Amino acid sequence: MAVAPMDCGAGSISLGHKVLCRFGVPNSSRLRWVGYDRKQRTDQLIARAVSVDRTQLDFSNPDWKTQFQEDFDKRFSLPHLTDVIDVEPRPTTFSLKSRAPLENANGTMQGSWNGYVNDYDRALLKVIKFASPTSAGADCIDPDCSWVEQWVHRAGPRKQIYFEPQYVKAGIVSCGGLCPGLNDVIRQIVLTLEKYGVKNIVGIQHGFRGFFEDHLSEVPLSRHVVQNINLAGGSFLGVSRGGANISDIVDSIQARRLDMLFVLGGNGTHAGANAIHDECRKRKLQVSIVCVPKTIDNDILLMDKTFGFDTAVEAAQRAINSAYIEAHSAFHGIGLVKLMGRSSGFITMHASLSSGQVDICLIPEVPFTVDGPNGVLRHLEHLIETKGFALVCVAEGAGQEYFQKSNATDASGNMVLSDIGVHLQQKIKSHFKDIGVHSDVKYIDPTYMLRAVRANASDAILCTVLGQNAVHGAFAGFSGITTGVCNTHNVYLPIPEVIKSTRFIDPNSRMWHRCLTSTGQPDFH
Image (tube, rainbow, N blue to C red; front, side):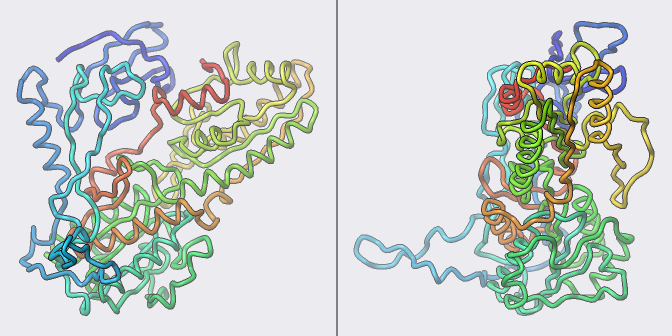
């Protein structure tokens, strides 16, 4: 295996006095991190191209690509009902009659046309061939950045289905926190189920809690019920974090005679849905469990974008604009905005980029120093001196190393974060007071305002596609899958592959470099 010295640069992550670096994309689950100790002032580190998923991969073996692809195909193969039970396919009831078949040149109708997705259709997971691991955002499997095809299943309606629609009972549940677009997804799942001919559709109230709380009854759903729910934010079915014992949930699924369960949620919810899927397989139930990834943080692996993200970025603009006006209007004004993003700074980065007014963007993936000659406070001094005001945008999960760690967790098992916004507000006020310079700090925390709004046009379209594809996947007989967009194509992915880790911003990516160019901020180290 090739070993080469390499400088971390922007790709380092600070954990106390330890700095972690990696070969290729930061925070990727594919490659193993190696570290150096800041206290030892080591300038070089050894970066090894090691596949975490295939640690035994030997790049000196001329057949390593074949081995990798075989392993990839195995991991990304979609679980199917026929893996554990004997069920025969039947012609689909998903009608495309509203679209006229294509005509031949002589005016006769073609016998077949491109209305359905073939079971063997695939989309490429990665589409860029990087020439070098030093290329911006390089995602490499081996030290030579060899091109390896990675194909995933295309989403959409099939000609053959594995359920009889008239006998199907389908359930929908939304878990975790609120997210713009939840009602759009619920609506599209119901409309598409009815398009197949399903008459018995129910909503499970308040997440997985609805499976075991006696007072939370099923909500009958139909086109008439959900027709206008997309006009409002929130969740028509309610949400809740945490849940019951997996075995109890599957007992409830059996008691309710559910054949399909559509689960809307983030990483934790996906993990729960996968456990439900495994238990259903163990019991050899003809039940399809299909997820729709939901998080405004945009931190689901492998996917271009999750629904609600665009709306959250748009909503963040109002907070940033208010902070800008306050800072610009005040004498030595400093606007400080804290946005959502526990471990990934996608909202903060994109909101900073789109506003064009942000001077400092702070995200969890890129460590920063507050004090000292290269710190945030010194740069704020420079901004006040040169332009008279400043605007700072920080993600809620940034700078957590400045706080004493707590073992407290929320109902979903997430670590309770310390408030970096209030911390920075106090530090800024104290710093300028100490140096005898007037400052007027305006702090805005629009946290829950970002997720409680109605989906914008972009997210509404994405929700429509995801909701429809979730139903197509269930009728195709898949279970333990989620649907998303990879490189602009709609695909199905096995749940275990998208919950291996959180998706992070690559500090060496072109997008982060674009943000740095826009803000003009220095390296805060």
